[in-house]
Image (cartoon, rainbow, N blue to C red; front, top):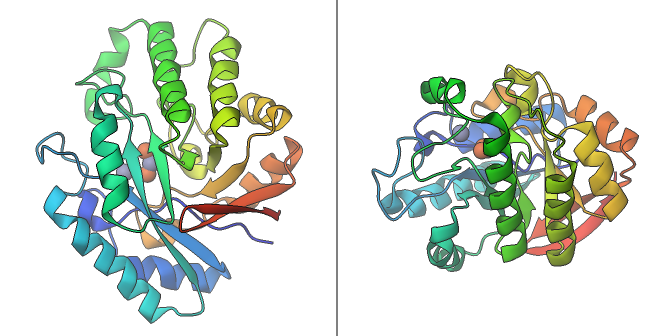
Length: 265
Ligand code: ZN
Ligand code: FE
Ligand code: FE
Ligand code: ZN
């Protein structure tokens, strides 16, 4: 079975192209039976950064996804968000969760401080001036808080700091173990995100080592292309499925209305 593509964006985030109905049409062409939109969630301040929808656009986002559903009745289309986890935004996230009947929420850490989104191509010079191991440690601290919060169904791209090739010098296994324990406790899944293959790191998020640890702990998985254009839907899924199976996984998780089922991969 081809797993669902649960990580796709829309132009409302200001750095993606193509309407949701075009992503859906591409998914149908590929033979996918299920997809989910998970665009970057709004922040209470519309000028928080420039890569997410504005708060007033949330209803428009839902309407775009509903149009894709209407145009492609043969395809299961889930409505979700990729929500930035910041430790001081927990109340905001709870409020977002209550505003629409989401099928799932992806929790993502991009910010390791109030002002540094580590995957930003415009802030790469910050990587040259930082303690790389300290960034990895803070990233996993935040990821663990996100998993432990129980606010999310899936944790996105769980080793994002590798994006530009800044690998840790210290062994991160203890940080990863703590994070995965939190996932297990709250039964939060992690995703295999193929966008890493299109970045400098040239590797699926997260690494095979993390996936093997996750499988050993009994953490569930989903799949996502992190498509920012219709032609990126389902990209490199064959490779992701192979990696999942080689890491020991036999199932993929499905979400409808925030309830879950584990399907045979
Ligand atoms: Zn994006
Ligand atoms: Fe992300
Ligand atoms: Fe994304
Ligand atoms: Zn993402």
